[in-house]
Length: 611
Image 1 (tube, rainbow, N blue to C red):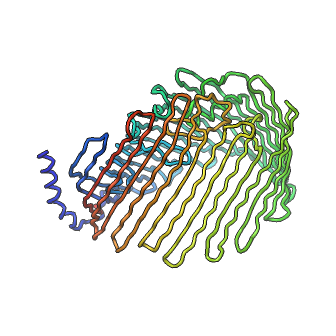
Image 2: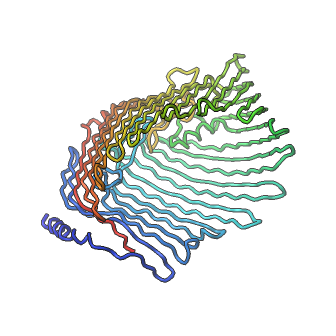
């Protein structure tokens, strides 16, 4: 304790030195560089019901060192370091003191062989476990990432690019003792070339990921997902007569996963052909063919791409799909286009053959209206099923409008669809969405408000709906006052991953129920900010979220409350700062009381231009 107070006394005694001027600009041989940053020192107090109280005098800051060697097109670099930064003493979004470094460099950027390297590392930083449409759960932990990219662009030779990325993170969730982690790596190669009137391209990629889902979300501490993926392909395109074009592609992808001891692996071959001609400037005709030799694998792969895993769906079963589509469009005017189409889809899945014939038409229109612009589109589709002979009628419409009416900036949009096709011909989707906003200024006074929402669900399947709605408003008077408020509500089905809950990426009846998480809740927030006099900044914000999550294994009622405030006064290159941040977060499934943690800071910082 005596040592810490001696350090505090020395820092206090040295604070007047921060006001001294500093020389700038330096050059070392062929290296041209500059460095600037902020050094801070102050009193910090942290306390909570699950955190031992801590009172100390801390030093921190943010620094940036950048420059080039010989020439910026030859080699340039940038390094940023931050130490003991939090919501209470800076704009870093962390309830705790976060530290880290971000490095990047570009080499040969002005040549035909450019490349770059990036690296970042963060300690004790704040993160989020996502919840669709609601405030996220707050996490804290460590993370690092690394990336390298290089390319070759020689004239009259195939181009080539390569990129490698890797990273990992470990975090814990405030309000529980649960921990989560994410680890990934990826390699991407791509080449392109022009030969005999053809544009040729080829690519290869491979990667892998490991993630552990917090027990309060998954219901079991053994929820670990290991996955790997690869993809390779070739494509070519060329021009056709009548202002036409032709392209085709062959793509193969593979995956492997391990989830709760269940292994899944497989490959998918995709083939696509597209052709289009424009006999006149107003008429266009297109045709396309898409074939997959593993439809079940496409479903599994979409889940893996979202960060999840599939248990109980056989990837090695025989399945395939074929889609043939023809479209003819006509544009009598620049702001009007009409089209008609015919489509044939066949799929072999789960030991059954399915087929659907579809035909219909659509129209899009845009026009000036009341000094604004309105545009919309409408389409109608008739579907006939081979299996039951049943007919369905699909319909979709979109519309949006923007204008300046009586000084108000007005914007709105609306979309609706019934019996829209999904990846599987056996399922149809229906949805609607809307949004609107108003904004106006009276001199320094301004006000705005907005709302939006949506709902989506499988037409034939009850209990598959996802819905959300949000509202926001703000008002301000120059620099004197800015006030904002928002409210959101959301519920539906999601997939639990290492990074959060994500919307179910495939028709949910094809996934086992133990992989589906149900969620619902609402959240709201308020904030105030003011600069009553020059160089003085006052701000405060409050946010609250209440939600419920459940799976076959666990149900939890959750809450999240956050309050942040900061007062900052600038005098020349000195900033006097006082800040307070508080987080309360809890989960009924954890079996413990919500965790509350607060931090307070009061100190001074000085901006430097070192050289």
